[in-house]
Image 1: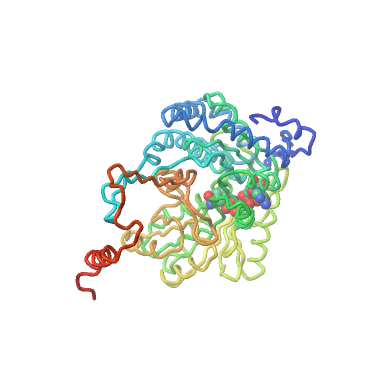
Image 2: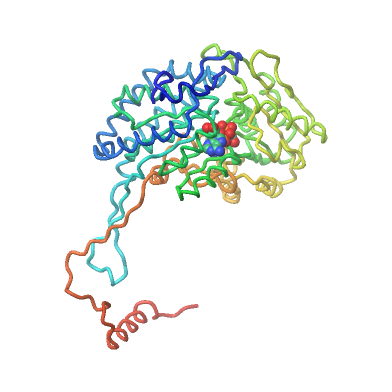
Amino acid sequence: MASVEQAPAAAQGGTGIPVENPATGETITTVPTLGREDVHELVARARAAQPAWDAIGFDERGRVLRRAQKWVTDNAERIIATIVSETGKTYEDAQLAEIMYAAAAFGFWAKEAPAFLADEPMKSANPLVKGKKLVVRYRPVGVVGVIGPWNFPLTNSFGDCIPALAAGNAVILKPSEVTPLTSLLMAEGLRAAGLPEDVFQVATGDGATGAALIDEVDFVMFTGSTKTGKKVMERAAKTLTPVGLELGGKDPMIVLADADVDRAANAAAYYSMNNGGQVCISIERVYVEAPVYDQFVAKVTERVKSLRQGRSDGPGSIDVGAVTFPPQLDIIDKHVRDAVRKGARVLTGGRAGNGPGMFYEPTVLVDVDHSMSCMTEETFGPTLPIMRVGDAEEALRLANDSPYGLQASVWTKDTRRGEQLARRVEAGAVCVNDAQVNYTALELPMGGWKSSGLGTRHGAGGIRKYTQQQTLLVTRFAGKRDPHMFPYKRRTTLLLGKLTRLLYGRGKRD
Ligand code: NAD
């Protein structure tokens, strides 16, 4: 299915999902909710189309992906308009974190897929396989189901489809019911780039549509909340279908006394408020060493106070956009209210904006601690709680006091010490004097520890997960019978025992 109008007949008569512009409250359109039968039909079409897509090889697939890359840059304004309309984010958040990401990703996977998935000739030290050809190869799994969230409809929903396609799979994308339009537009883009029919399809719908997809596909790539991620894994276990899970986070920022306070404050304001704070790798909490705490808080508050919030009216019009998903507004407010009730102070913001549209004021909280949900649960909004700490060890202990482990940052002019501290943070990625930009380096694996996920995207692992690894052993020169074959003979058995001792039993041990 490539567009709303082309939804399966069965879905046309079913319930529809209204898609709203969160910055205005207007309904943009309605998309169908696909049921189990519809999903089954899409998967059958995908299965029929996949072998030919695999057979055309990396070069031909790369050509399609590079044409799609050009389509993205040629149609950037249209894609940005679609993303902005269904998410309420700023023009800049759509351009930098979505268009630039997707354009880069098409080129990256077109170029790197052949190397990441090339046959790997192996050598073994084991005498039993001496002289034999040993190869590891990667074969596409078949049909990949991608289930995505609403915060980055291009980068975090569609983005994971690109390596899956590059590997030779057919893909069915189930976008968030909140933001399905970007995915439908990308289906049009892939068609324009010459992608064969049914190799990429979009299954619009809700959680039940996602669950139906899990039952049918060969790999599930899920990005979303930890709560749903657990359900996805449980469901996939019924068919023993492998999953990749990119889940929630509560990223800590540790500011040491010798940090460049201006840079740290600018980064804290930006990386907590960009995309309205709705970034899985947002800075969600800050720990600042006492000597620079007051200075840091003053600078951050000044930056945050100056942010312009509202409906995007093109480049440079606003800094912070809307809250995309209605229930999120309540979660953000609940975290702020809980903190205030327990003694926190609001230095700026602290309220939902006045309608129309869904906004929460960019908010800075101080006098916070780990008894407050704003420091322990994912807020996923434009809030920044800042906590004073006695030293780096206290900051590290608090940073690691979390069920999440997605990303973190350490700020210090002593980069050696910063890196040492970074290595002790329990997170899949840690930046020193930076945040978030590691995500743009597609060579770097990205994935959460603890409750933040399972597996990685990007890098070699980001495409190999969409394949089945197969080992090949080819014996070219051999006798009629190898010594270890039947019948067992005393002499051979004793000889093999001697050989084992010779190979592995000699030498001194401590
Ligand atoms: P969500 O878990 O509510 O929904 C994600 C997707 O799962 C949606 O498409 C939804 O329809 C689908 N879904 C819901 N129930 C399902 C079920 N039972 N079976 C299958 N699919 C089901 O998440 P959200 O609110 O859309 O997104 C926000 C969350 O995503 C945040 O926690 C954020 O941190 C996380 N996120 C993580 C990353 C990352 O890379 N780690 C990136 C972006 C967002």
